[in-house]
Picture 1 (cartoon, one colour):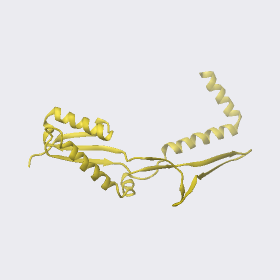
Picture 2: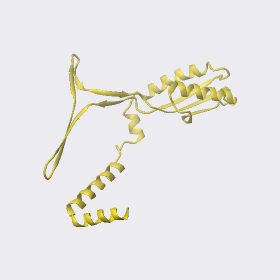
Picture 3: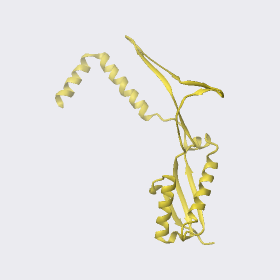
Picture 4: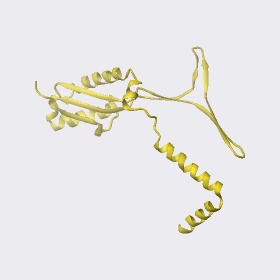
Length: 171
């Protein structure tokens, strides 16, 4: 391994162009690694205005389902959902490498139909449920609590570590 690193070091010392290319590559990787889309969670939630309606719909259906569990009693459900949908559109890309430069070109694949034209959708990802919080009267029973967690996990496809069931306060 030492011989390999010595050879690489010697080659980089001799060939300044290669050294420049390697440094540019590393800096590019660092930029990609540390750059984000710059949006905070609040901005993401604002850009999805119908998210509250989706959360309410899921909460209502889940509440009515959990109420059917023997021993659950009164139920209150809160669901947190990421952005509603993510659409992936097809893109044609082309890279041309010249002697001293390289060019990258990309364009969306457009299809026309009777309703107009638009990008070719490759897939639409459904909303992602981040977590579920449940309070119910029957949560003092371990078996009822486990039954609710398994029911919610199976229904929504959410891992059990993102579901929390706790006892409801008495009025």
